[in-house]
Structures are given as C-alpha cells and as structure tokens.
Length: 295
Ligand SMILES: [Fe+2]
Ligand SMILES: [Fe+2]
Image (cartoon, rainbow, N blue to C red; front, side):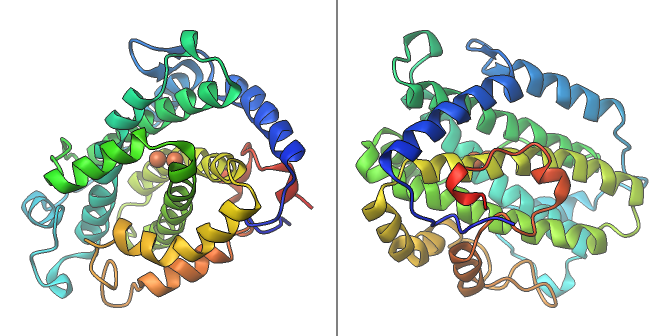
C-alpha cells in the first residue's frame, strides 16, 4: 500500500530522496554512454527482451494504421481495435520523441553535472530516449517500421521553451506530464488483452517492451514529485486540468473509441488520486518510490 503522490514532504526528506534515487538509478540503468545517449543495463535488458520476442502472426493493416496515427481521420468505429490501439500508442510516443531532443540538449553532460539533480536529469533524459527505441520495437512486433513525424512548429517551440525553463516554471508541468502519461499507459495496458486477443504471443512481447517503459515512468513520477515543495504541489493540482487538455488535446475526447473510454475528466481524476497502488506488479517489482509515499 502506498500514500498519495501528493503527500507532503519536508525539504530534508526531499534532499534524502534525491540521494536515494541517484543511487538507485546508477544501479538500475548502469553506465551512461554520452555519445550513444544510452544506458548500459537498459541496453542489456532490451537485448534480452528482443531475444525472446515473438512477432505477430498477421501483420497490421498498415494503411489504416498510418492513415490514423497522427490524427484519427477514419470513423473510429470502422477502425479495427488493434490498429486503433497502436495508432493511439504511436501518437503518444511521437510526442515523447519530439520532446526528448530539446530535453537532452537542455541537460548537462554527466562529466559537467555538479548537483545531484543535474546528474539525475541527465539519466532521466537518456531513459526517455530509450523509450523511443522501445516504442519502435513495439511496432516492429507487428511488422511495421515507424519513424517519428515532425510535430507542428508551435508545439516544437513549446517543447524547446519547456526544456529550457527554470525549475520554478518547469517542475510542475514536468511532474504532471509524467503523471498523466502513466494514467494513459495504464489505460493502454488495460486494453492490451482485449485488442490483441488473436495474437497472444506477440501481445506478451508488447507487454515486455511496454512494462519496461512503464517501470521507468513509475520512477519518473516520484522523481519529478520530489522537485516540488508544499506550494508547488498545491499548484500542481490546480494546473492538472489545463495540462491534461494541452497534452491530450489531439486525442479524440474518448479514446481510443466506442467501448474503450477514457475521457480527460477521468484522466484528471485518476491523476489526482494516484498512489502507485494497482500498478502491475511487474512494473512495481523494482520501481523506486519516494520514502514519503511509502507506508
Ligand atoms: Fe517516457
Ligand atoms: Fe518519463
């Protein structure tokens, strides 16, 4: 059982949690290769997952997937659920991919990082880069090669400004992005069984890849929470609905469609009540949770 992610924490507690998270990160993600922007143990884990990966028996209807992966243009009711699910995953992953380059450039190389939070942020950026690779492998499981599509100029500018913003402006939205992302991932996870029912083996491979992303994100939520003081945590709650509208503005209001519903109101509610409880045990197995969220 865990406490709310919005649980109060003292400045000393937060300082101690940064220390413990940094120790955890080095252990979990291994050595950072600055040139390759990769982390050693994450790379090994990906290789292990890929060595046991099973490709789908039938390929995706690629034209339907591609036509709807930036914006849903067909009537969602006519899109097969597998294609709809993967198109929604692509749309989210594409935003992540667009945000990551500015984020990497805004952090300092490990050799120049002075504070513990600088070091953590460099690792965090490298982990986000690995998510792009993991997502591409998810699509490859269905015989589809994807590239990331450029996002519009305004969004790109927003990502750049966001990455360079001082902590006082960046910390709340950064925390909320991680939190809302996890709510979205949990929703996607709850659809996998149903949407990929005819591909039981490929589905398990997708889950392996997806849980690798989700376990990082579970840690990111705690890390980004730890940047916030009492005032920050209070205003983060107030900012949540606006942030949700911004981050998921290009998703159909009910996504993916029909009987699978997650509207923005629900996303906000689930974010406000987030406490790590109910996350898949494989995701939580080796996740880092701030001490003040543990009972
Ligand atoms: Fe991510
Ligand atoms: Fe993240």
